[in-house]
Every structure is written in C-alpha cells, then in structure tokens.
Amino acid sequence: HEVVLDVNIATCHLKLKEYQEAIERCKMALAIDKKHVKAHYRMAQANLELLEFENAEKSLEKARECGLQTKTLSVMRKKITAARKEQRKIMRNFQQKMAAKL
Image 1: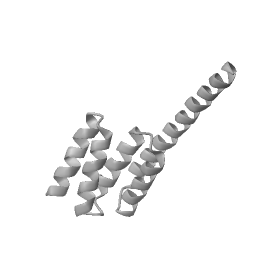
Image 2 (image 1 turned 120 degrees about the vertical axis):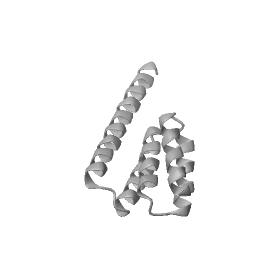
Image 3 (image 1 turned 30 degrees about the vertical axis):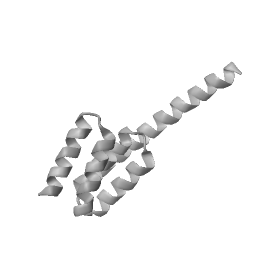
Image 4 (image 1 turned 90 degrees about the vertical axis):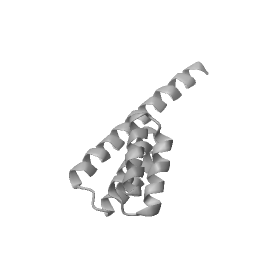
C-alpha cells in the first residue's frame, strides 16, 4: 500500500505544480515496485512540465514496458512532441532577437 500512497502523493504534487517533489515520490514508489505503471507515467508528466523531454520519454517508455495502454501512450507522446516543438520555437525566437541586437 505504500507504493499507492507514494503515487497518490506524487499526483498531489503534480496538481500543486511541485514537479521535482512529484518525481521524488515516484522514485520512492519505484524503489518498492519497479514496474508500477502509474509511477512511471506520473514521472513522465512531471518531467514534461520541467521541460525534461528525454527523461519524460524514458519514463513513458518504462511505463509502456510495464503495460501502459497504447492510447494513453499516444496522447502523452503527442504532448511531449508538441512541448518540444514549442520550446524549440521559443529558443529560435530568442536567438533571433539576440542576434538582431548584435
């Protein structure tokens, strides 16, 4: 039951936008049960919010290996891809503005 408690607390941290704390709770859950699908999925969500795209994808892949449903995977992968594109766009705009000031 401790695993479920840790994952539920991680969910609360996500809702409070305390993403690093959510990751830590997921790690605690995974230390007990390495194949807990929701812990991997919640970690992917937290990493996505922190713009840690590679870590989000790694957690999502582990969730898939543990049996996460294809539709849920697809939705999260699309979110990661969209966030990555948006981040690239922001960086490109920033670089253009900085180059224009030189």
